[in-house]
View 1 (cartoon, rainbow, N blue to C red):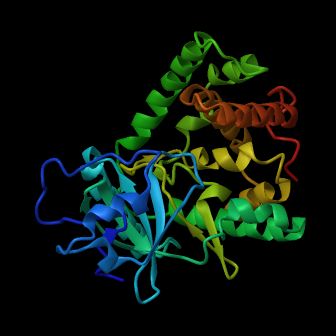
View 2 (cartoon, rainbow, N blue to C red):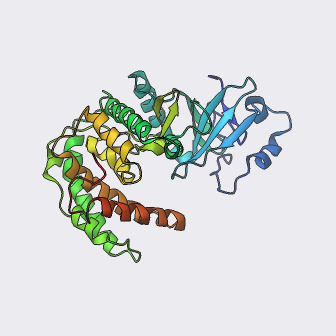
Length: 337
């Protein structure tokens, strides 16, 4: 598996960068058609490396993702970014290596490099093609969801305890700038032509930054933690797709955003995640801070997309969150127990 250097839509090149061979992956990309031009004999042919390539459609990012399989039957997970992101891809890979070495349960990174379609990262494949926790949760009992939530909370705690890439100035950076970002976001949203129902309740929260943001030490963050970025294999959870290519520190409560947005749909999982993280009920400042980050995430998400289906999905989440917080009057959501 360690010598894997190609997919059926690209030929890896670590030593030399050939001008004109780097192309962005288009949504209409067909890996089989694209492969035909490489069928004449030449070094490192795609067909010499992988027998299968399966696109991964789960997730909201534009990054191209595949499950690939070589002739021996070994599988790997492949991510491809535009070539201009190569330096960030390298930083991301090195971050994953360090994180894996600390014992955080995440697929082992194998290699990174350049290919004709961009910059890539290859990592160990975990489980099966359909073990994403976000797709598994609907089929589980409430008791099972709670137990998996506890595991998810403990895994997030371990990520936050990772002693790498700590930035001594990050606490000041986060606590001083985030309130301004929130207020700027609120003003930007007012100018947006499309508004969520009840948006004014979220903007009110964004304009009143909790004092507790200044009371916590910063830590390493996942940045996109939730059931959509967890894999379930034999009762073990694996964290994938860390949201920041350039890993940064910040307020640990920020990583609970997606846990809370789906709280009304999966209260047992979300409650379990909170209790698992704190090994009991959370401290007093937790819910007010996470309510602030929840408002931030919903408003920011609604501004970042023009996709009709995504807009409708965010509208449903926003409505459910307003119900859980009684139009944001409550600090603690009604689904938590």
